[in-house]
View 1: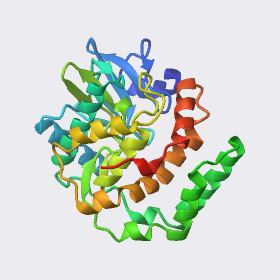
View 2: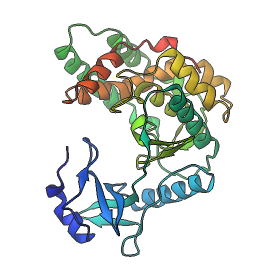
View 3: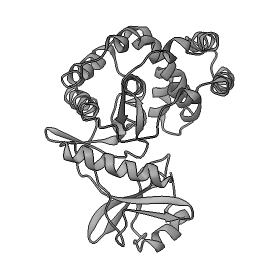
View 4: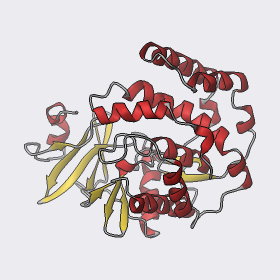
Amino acid sequence: MYKVDDYKKVFEQLKLDDSRAVSLYPYAPVFKVRLNDEFCVLKRTKKDENQMNKLLVFQKHLKNNEINVSLPIKRFDEETHIIDETRWVIYPFIEGEPYNGSDEHIRLAGDLLGRLHACNNDIFNHGFTWQNYGGVFLTDVIDDMKTIESRYSEQLHIQDLVDEAVKSKFDHLREIDFPYVDATWDFKATNLIYSEENVSLIDLDNSGYIPRIFDLCLALILFHTSSPLAPNRPFTIDEWDLFMTAYKKHITLTEEEVLNFTEYLKFVYLDEGIYAIVDLEMDDQQRQIEFIKELMLLDLTKYKI
């Protein structure tokens, strides 16, 4: 957990009272603070000015399309603040319930992602590129596999995925013109707050322009990660079908997306799933350790869109 004392300069420059600030997230400095007698959230955001400006446009675009998102609170007439080369932002604290794994919460999540993808406006000029998935990426995956081998006696299906990727280098997927969307690139249960019949989206700081199918794969694999009240496993087949039924009320998937979903899911698993297994398995929360072990058992071939 991040400590308030380590960020005293940030609190001082923004003239925020740190005496009652609370750390909200174990993997990044995110603090619940008081400002003008209201609870707010102080957190890091995109450092690049151009990317940050695009993010602000994206957030306002979503808001204008009736998607519940938080917009930055201006402090000293500025929406973001550079302190020691790090950019910080203050958001309203959203009251509500965390994701609990119920059918209704799953349905609302799928509906939200569908509406988010449907109101795409080609805002971002940064995001996914295949140039990041060359030889260095595969070398890193192989190194991660050595770490996994040192922790587990069984490699399950993961080694087969790695061997397949090294052989193919994702050549088939690279050639397909999948639809791109403006996306949060981090659609997880921890970033959703529920209230009655609605759901709010928080923490859009990883947003960018990515293949729509990538966002779906990422949600399938890691939606339940680090979410305290969520099941300690990825979606079941029935849960995923419920999620996708709600999603497809707003989106018509292309034939290429449907036919290549399993192969793309394998790619995203190597990119995001392997990272989670290596970097989050040693988390001191037993719930997260159990999630990672279930992630290793995931049969990617059973899921469809």
